[in-house]
Amino acid sequence: MSRTVKILVALFVIAVLWKVVLSGSSDVDIEEVDYDPVE
Image (cartoon, rainbow, N blue to C red):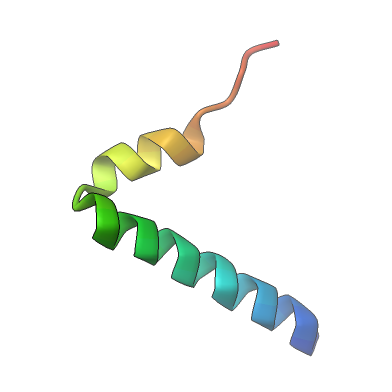
């Protein structure tokens, strides 16, 4: 993997973990992230 891709992945992981910590509920966070309109 290129350096840029690794940085982007790291930032994404940090952002998700940060949301989980702030919300205090990983389940709710996962549901929000997995939301996908049918149409």
